[in-house]
Amino acid sequence: MKILKTLAVISLSSFLAMNSFAAENKSSQQGTQQQMTDKNLIAFNKAIKIKLIERKIGNDGQQDFAINIFELENTGNKNIKSLHWTAVYTVDGQPFMSQPIRINSEKPLRTKSKEKLTVQIPLGTVNEQARNIFKDTNASIGVMNRAELIQFSNGSKIEVK
Image (tube, rainbow, N blue to C red; front, side, top):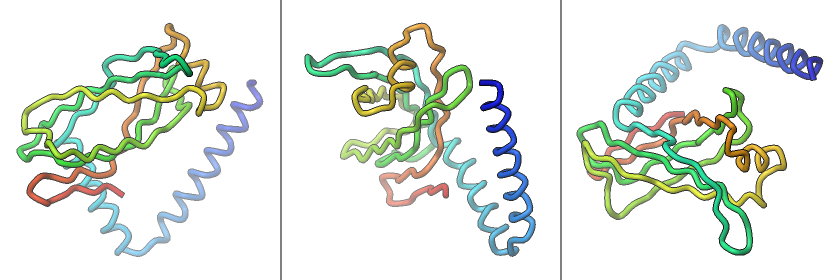
């Protein structure tokens, strides 16, 4: 196991070093694109707060589900019509699964309001490691949210690439 961790660290370090070298050689236009993405990420995080507030296991009589309840808080000054992000589930800070989440609603999330969102993951569709982690009620599961898109009721949007 220690060898696998070492290999993973070495691979990640090599990958980061190669990406760092490649990033230094990109044009100023791409630098401007990165600045825009950073601005958009900041705007995204100012407009919405996404928190995993509860998790449990459910069963519909045919299969088990991981049930994750998120709290969405519109902290911006525009009603949100669509929200896209990827939830990266972690255990003890280590990612073990990601899930794209797409909300396109007729009824917008009003400014300065909160709503709960229930996300069900059929455990028969995930790998064994993820299934075991979700079923372990003592596992310290967290989530890192990767921002993607907010579309507001007025037609404007924030897109993070």
